Length: 84
Image (tube, rainbow, N blue to C red):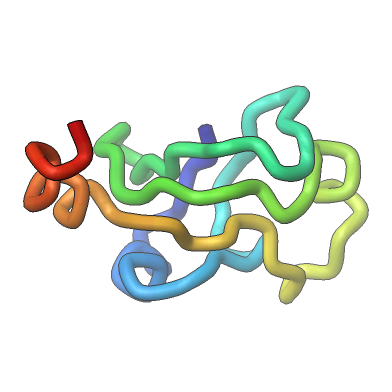
């Protein structure tokens, strides 16, 4: 899981996340892992794929992409029956 700060919450609903838009990252996240992005108040927002592991994240430039957008929780809930 990754945490997003309040400011970029809306921008991530429609795209990828850069390092500057994250407040933290779970230890031992690997490249290509499926992740759930949660808000600073622990509300799940999005599903994505990690574009960097924990070690690469720490070394990355602030503008580097770290989460690639897959879906949001609203999209999942609307299509839940189709997906099951």
